[in-house]
Figure 1 (cartoon, one colour):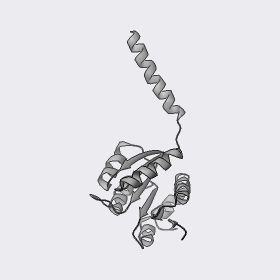
Figure 2 (cartoon, rainbow, N blue to C red):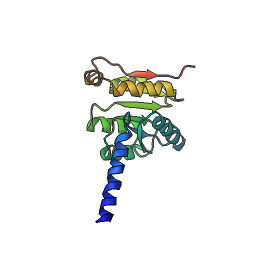
Figure 3 (cartoon, helix red, strand yellow):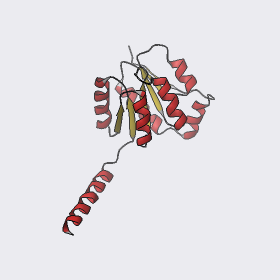
Length: 163
């Protein structure tokens, strides 16, 4: 009996610790570059976000089904399933999911607007701009998301590092 009590206490402690660690949101970070995954995950966690990582599009979709994702950051150049395919699949599953597309590819903004992407960020990453875009998209009213998705008011943010 005593063993059961200590086990129960341990579970209760874990729950109270988890409740005490309120986060700003759960971010799905999909990129095939281990360095980007590690560095960006560390920054996001230090800012109070929980992060789920995926190394390709297929893994990102699987992680999405496993977790309650609040926002996704997706690199376009990934193996197995590319960024645009992943974006399309995620928005089919959850049309209102805010997504930031990250890319080193030039001239992706017109595609991002047409697709209803929340924001497009070109590499190299500007962390201040990225963190602000995450915060803005997480607090964005549903009506604004719908407006962007239906193309009525294309308001895709273009996050460019100042030269």
